[in-house]
Structure formats: structure tokens, C-alpha cells
Length: 267
Image (cartoon, rainbow, N blue to C red; front, side):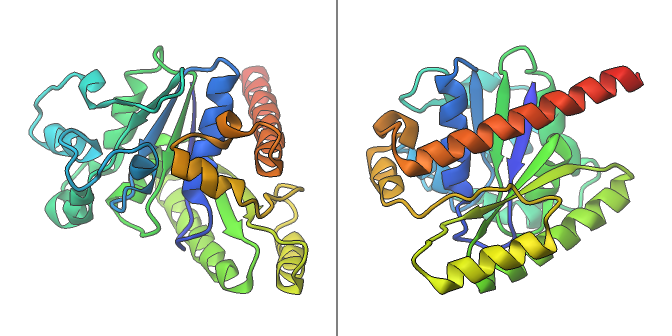
């Protein structure tokens, strides 16, 4: 089972679009996929037509039942997305209070890791959409995944969010004494603007080893797909944004396969 976390400590950089796009493409390839919404804003949940203000069973329920040591069928928390092979574990706006309620309790950083580990046979891939704030939710998302995907909007202010995200990642890796593969993805690139071009140059200069060599372009069809509540691959497979995510997915899968092969040889 492959688990990827999509995160950045800046909002509006394309985290939810990246999660939906990659998840939809995986499901389209016949890979049973789960999308997990850890953001109290519930953008991923809203994308598929659910209201994070009123939803009853969600990730929030998962954490509190773990604290209470009470069992609940995982399947009862899942929601359909309208796409075959693509499930959703939704968020609730109540997640905003989670740090205050349970953040200081021992063992809360591995709740998601332990739950998802029990469902390895159910899904080929899991993608976690992470909140832009460092707290118990982001710690859980990073502890649960094998790869971090960091979308970065191609504009200068977004570069500061990337720096904060990388500092957080270094801190968590140092604390856990484990490394975590990460890929930086330039998003919302507009080749018509100098700001986008200059930002992409700066990303390539500073993070050449971690930056995906292409970029996700500005594409108004992402907005249309969101309005329709569908991954862009369902709405328009030939859209340039979908084609870009398809190439990104292929690259990530190749790298994961190569990494798994190296680990098998080392073992």
C-alpha cells in the first residue's frame, strides 16, 4: 500500500487539487484509492458535496474513538465520491479543536498510522490532504506516509511557505530519527507572467534535487471539475492540467518502485 501526504504550511497552493487529481488518476488506473481529509476547512470533503459543518462520522470521530479506546467500523466513516474505486474519509470542522482537546496526550501522533496500517489489504493507495498548520493533524499525516508531496504556487510569497514546511519536516525527521522522501511540485504556473517564470527559476535553483522537473499549469478546467464534484480526469482527460498530473503520477510511481527495489536488495 502506498500512502502519500500532500502538505504545505501555506494555504491556496493547490493541495486539495493535487490530492483529488492524483487520487482520481490512480482510481482510473484501477487502483483502489482512499482520500483522507485532515483539514478542518474540509475543502476535500466539500469538493465531493459533503458539508464538513454537519457531517456526523469523520476523521474527528476516528481520533476521539481512539482516545476512548472504543471500536467503530471504519467503513461507516467512508463516503462515496461518485468515481468507482475512489473513497473519501471526510473531515469535520470540529477538527479545529483537536489540538486543544487531545494534542498533549501521549501517542496521539500515530493514530492515523495505526488505523491505516490495519487496512493495507483494502486500498492500493491512500492520499492525505493536510492542513496548513503544524499540529497533531500534520504530525499524524507525516507519520503515516511514505512520501510527502509539497505543492508550491509559482509566486514569491509561496516560497516562504515552502521554507517553513521544509523546516517542519526536518524537525519531525530529527525527532523520529527517520527520513521521509518528499517531492516539491510547482503549481498554478502561468507562462504568461514574469512572476511565475522567475519563481520557477528560483525553485529550480534552490531545490533542484527535490523539485519535480515539470509544473502544473494554470487551467480553468480545475474550477469546472470542482464545481462538478469530479476529478478533472473524469471531466476532461485531455485537459492540460490533467495531463500534467498524469505525468507527475507516473514519475512518483516510478520513483516509489525504484525505492522499493533498493530496499528489497538492501534487505
